[in-house]
Image (cartoon, rainbow, N blue to C red; front, side):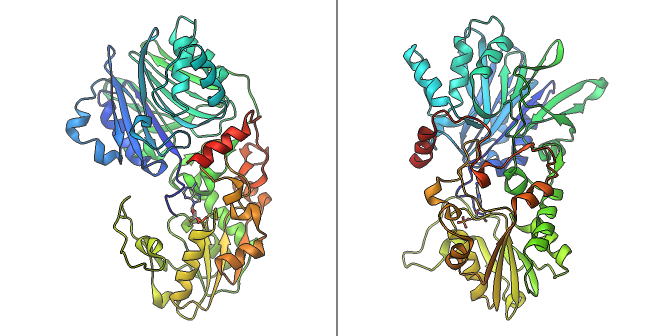
Length: 470
Ligand code: AMP
């Protein structure tokens, strides 16, 4: 439920709409849950690109007068909480540069696993980097390419990248989007009909962005696909050979909004299935099913429906908790958790509770929440987690910590139960997770639960060190 590990990003792009920047702002507004550290929008009027970005939430940075400085009928946008690179303003995206291919801007969701090697090569050949983000590498590869067209240079650059990327590019007169060959991170394609029958094309990490602006979801940008939209129309092409898809299952478990369709599948449906399967695999002798808001709500609904145990929203979340706050000098136990959650005592007193959350990472938050429910008078707390134990770090864009900090990588379920001080603890099995997202042909990545990474991680020590530096 907490934002402390939140390390995802959201991307948005639009072509052929007179209000491109305003709609990008709204798209980012809907994608705010994917990153709250910084945001940015680049727009083009066909001749020049303007780019405005900074720290903070979309709504804080993009006041009407700021949006007014982003003219044109095409734009891209980004909302970020870094996975690679430091958390500083210089890493806010889009990145925008002028090079021999003209002016280009790029925004990225994912993590390029060979960025360090590429950066070393580029620096040896004279490239100068301004930020510590892996995304900047792409622009240097494009600038260095001998291909004459931007699309050609991009194709060449993309083929050198490894890992996870859903990318949106803006040139003076075109929008280009691309997805890595495994399709780790989502990228949906939609359209809007304008007066006179004109069509505006839109792209977003999640379809909830389309719903807000009244766009229709068409399909996903395919893994290994590049979509180019310019004055001559739309062209879709494979820049890389088809490879085994490896969609991030954690998008369905936790990251994406439940009202989104991600990898062609409604997230809410997956989460309810997770909860139902959890009730079958890990039943509990309880009086009430209580979700940890917001991350456990859909799974708890599924658990309650399957088990017949009543669902009660007995933990209330304060949605207005900011990023900075004054901590009382006299230590209050579990102050952090109390800021965000408050129990409804009469729903918990004397009851045996099934507490449902999506995942345990370090275990510290779960322990505080279990304690909070106990202190509110619950007789028993049975913690149920709607995915398998998180055993391995993610190198594809989710900032799970290294193995040493992952409680499940170093402890048995019984040891974790003792640590979180619950009466019982149950995790969903891997096969039930697969079933819940209807993954019949292994199209998802489960590396965080299995340690089986779908790509070669050439320099895994460097990737681990980068996580530790954060
Ligand atoms: P903890 O028990 O301290 O490991 O924290 C677990 C909580 O963190 C759960 O409520 C999860 O919903 C939440 N969580 C898990 N992974 C992430 C992530 N990558 N970003 C933000 N929150 C997360």
